[in-house]
Length: 291
Ligand code: GDP
Ligand code: GDP
Ligand code: MG
Image (cartoon, rainbow, N blue to C red):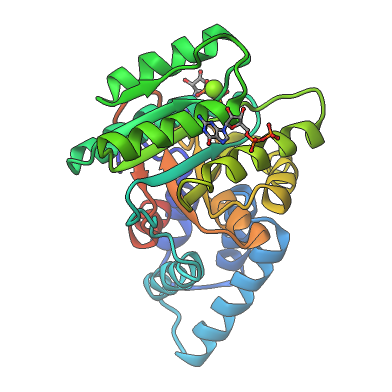
């Protein structure tokens, strides 16, 4: 992962950590680096205060100490929520939700691959039934991921009905994990939320839902956060997936989104390849971020 972290702070921090001592310029540079990384003004202020206190308490002037403290502070904050996926139910049903274009379908293919690497059997449900092309795209990604798919029986079939049939088949045939793709655009936001509620209600006739993963495009910054709120309020979201962290995204956004929604990040996508999805491990993430 280390070879492609465009969101890393380390470039911006290199100069300040190369110096012999911590001075006012160090603090200015650090603040600028955190703002550039999209932590947002509030989190940046809190981190700066924490670090100033710490540096004072330890009476250090060594930039290497400051770097270590920065890592510790960030890791502590990234770890406040539990990033573990809850997939122990059989079948474990995962609903994947989010607006159009964020990467839901791609994520399902990558997630299937990720689970197949742990020898889990995976069944994918094509509950985005609006366009035949959406089903075909999902079928392609499902095949890449080494999983099986349940397609709608006809174009425009009730998404809840496809979800139901998928879970029913998984129960009948003993699949361990079910991943349900959903639509990201309906005429109205209320319509979309109603559709998602209906899918949940119908699936829950068969089994509890293990995870509702909200996919967010990390390159959209604060915009993406605004979109997230409707899902967080109405779709029972249990985890976030941040995609496109290989793009122009800033690593600090990851913390901002977790703290503002109060929902843990569980997966991160860093590319368009089938293997470009990993779990979210604060320690590793912060190592890559700070260097
Ligand atoms: P959906 O509408 O939410 O289902 O989104 P798609 O899965 O169709 O993805 C929309 C676009 O984003 C596609 O071109 C994907 O290849 C791209 N995409 C998804 N995830 C990533 C990622 O992690 N990195 C990059 N660079 N592109 C991604
Ligand atoms: P309603 O359409 O608002 O009345 O919602 P329902 O809870 O009745 O069902 C929504 C969809 O899920 C329906 O279109 C059905 O296809 C599907 N569904 C719900 N319950 C069952 C069931 O027991 N068997 C099957 N095969 N499908 C079901
Ligand atoms: Mg899609």
